[in-house]
Length: 302
Image (tube, rainbow, N blue to C red; front, top):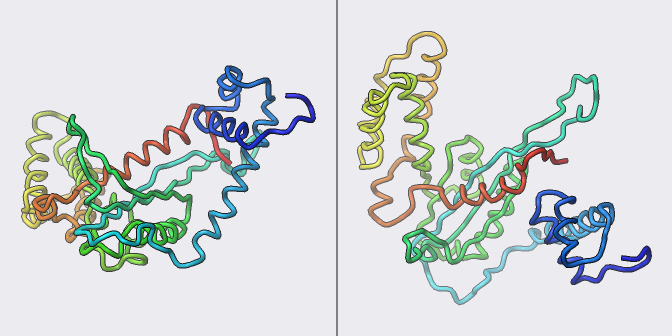
């Protein structure tokens, strides 16, 4: 481009997409050079920043008026599913670039994600892989209430008010249940089965070590009870485990307390028998997509 040439809206859209689909401005320049003339990194960076800021302004005002359902003639649905999760992202801290500093050079922030879909939109491909034909997702960096505002606004637009039952699935983090209590107090809570299983394996390793098959013999029967409607038996069994002094004892005590706090969130068999989800795979998949963008090699965000 010449020094005084203007970028057309269509050309700008292509450039911005190229930047977001690649890992860096340098990679974007290499890809864009195949279909566009030479544009320096500074111009490309300024364009992306300008378009991003312009897109954020209407996004903030979007949530001020009451939400209107997107498809007003949509009928009643048996189940509405809300899933919430998060993933860590690396940011430049206040001490970034300083040789001597008491401040952190790198800070970790949690990117929080929320997903809503009507269970009627769940289907399977010919290969048996689960898909959602209609869903809406939002993401937000700290604090959690910012995510709650956006999720609480978007879900009614997609038919939350027409659901006879509402299920809320989370990974066990305290902020997840606090958010649910604040925004959807009547929804039934369910701890994601995969994350519950992870805590079982953590408990098993503290009790039996890493040696197989002793580890599996201790964990799998408990996991089976949780999955097959015997969660109260599993909880009573776990409560009887003794915790010695030291780090191992702290792990056992922590996992026992964790399962007791989730005692009413593990009705897996009841949900599965109705064909309803017991895992938050949909939001975990969304987390994975975010991480492929935000956690690339050498990337630190501002």
